[in-house]
Length: 408
View (cartoon, helix red, strand yellow):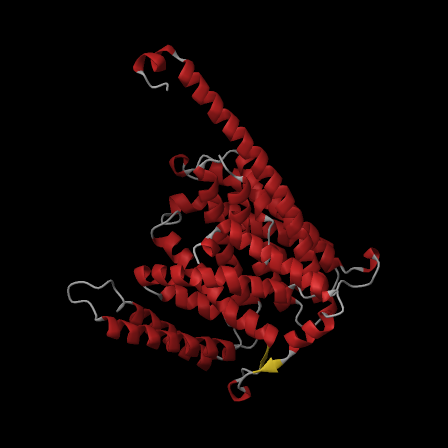
């Protein structure tokens, strides 16, 4: 399980699953796989007669958003975003990194019926971006990873808000009220799971509370699904409501399942698309908007936001991210994948052809960003390693270092 926690392994599994899904969809077994994805099952009386693809995107993906919410809560309370001074710089970069690709997409789809797809290129895949950084970034200063992490967490928060606001149709207030009650109960129960100590709960009692929390979480997810709000929002609400220490322990347990099963399965399912047998000129503006907005829009937006944040934010709170380092982070920001694929399904739910083209746009745009980001990270890391080696050599050759006996 520890292997699957690795950012490198998580990124490789996600990419491999997406490539496998796209390849198999264009082989003779592709139609059978797509039919299996469309097969439905579940209790219709509870409005849960979902397709296999629906169970993956609405059900399993809630676990991923649950972990994202726990990470977000930690960063906002005790991490890199715990004060507005520290959060301002990455927040400006995140907002610009959402606005710029949305504008690029709208420029491509102006006067068309595909403008509702503007949220698709706005998301950054935190797991994939950190994975690429881990693979190629040996020697980079920690501040680059910290800034990328903060940026991606805020980007996820914006994506969650977009899903909740723009992809909710005719919400049912009664279901939402009961779902909110479920979130409160879940949060209160989690506060009983403190570490055993003086006056702590016995192991059997803790297990009973944990089992009750699982039940409350499932019921809450069902209520959110029935309300008309996308069901993954239930995972977000539950993760934000959970007490800090139990939440971190739970995320630690669930992380290998999310990295090794949930995200690859979702990537495989979403990428299960037959490449349209049409000339390039016949592809929709939505495809071109996504393809360009992910690598280019994110690059421009995050770089601009990083520069503005360094100028506007308090000098003592700045992570010291120069323009070149901001460009490196911005190049990684164009890797969309998970949330972009989900938004593509939501935005084009009624148009299968454009939805498939959107999947291809996300995969190709993210692939361009992977190559550009990986190259930028590798070159920047090599520069930092050379600088470090040069400084070490100069210190070693100095008379003071030799006299003090520090050279070995």
